[in-house]
Length: 153
Image (cartoon, rainbow, N blue to C red; front, top):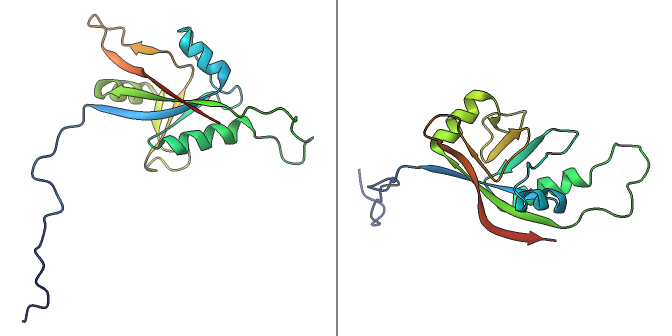
């Protein structure tokens, strides 16, 4: 067997892998939902789906919010001329224990509803809060909104 190349072989796995201690997902909120977040009131999801779609990519979070806020029933009356065009992009940081706790309780589910293995897609059922702590005596933090927001138009 003869050698046909002279390049070095590089191991694709880095020698030290840092353990993942948090899951950062993005959520685009409407102005009303964002006002609830700032006032530290419960943030209610869309009344039709009753859930939030969280994404690992900020642009996909914006696309999802834009699609749901401007959606109308096929063959219905044309949508109103006024539509929500501004969204606030927020990041939500889930602790590792928070992901496990919320998955087991059914409040958080992986995937897009059709494919549970779809990478980067998560759904949260019910209202969200500025931060959510467990009811155990240690008050373990399950998730918290990051304090950095971006306005998307």
